[in-house]
Image (tube, rainbow, N blue to C red; front, top):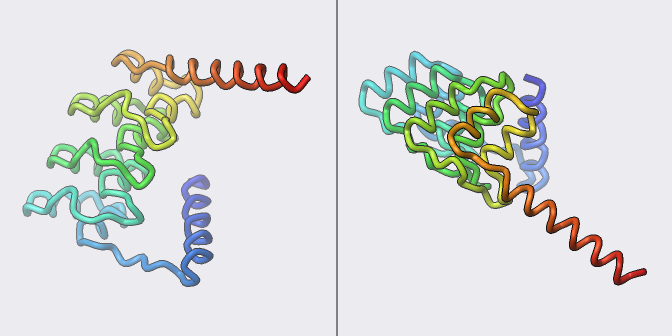
Length: 176
């Protein structure tokens, strides 16, 4: 919970500095309003009424990404089962699978759900991070195990780290 509050505080501070005003927190759609309130029953009702599960963005996040970021698992299931785009990327290129992999509970349920619906396991964001990268930040959790069991690999992370180390050693050797 503290992590979420800190994230919102940092976002508010950055927005205030960049734009010189408090950002508009008016939800872009009724669906997003329900997602922001954490109202799974309202989300379910909107989906049953034909609402588009991908309608609206809030600071670049889709309703699915926002639900995952807030660890609203029942709501996430409702959105996914209503056809929400599981490949939608936020402004950083991060996917719902990455957000599911980074959950505080270490519960692989959402990861398994997204993978069962066809989420790309090794999709990378603009920083080259994958869902496995995000999951490993929490340690060797059941989420890491689930991702690896579905073929996620940290080979590229390892190769990048080795290459950076070799480059640093070569630079140090040239400077000595």
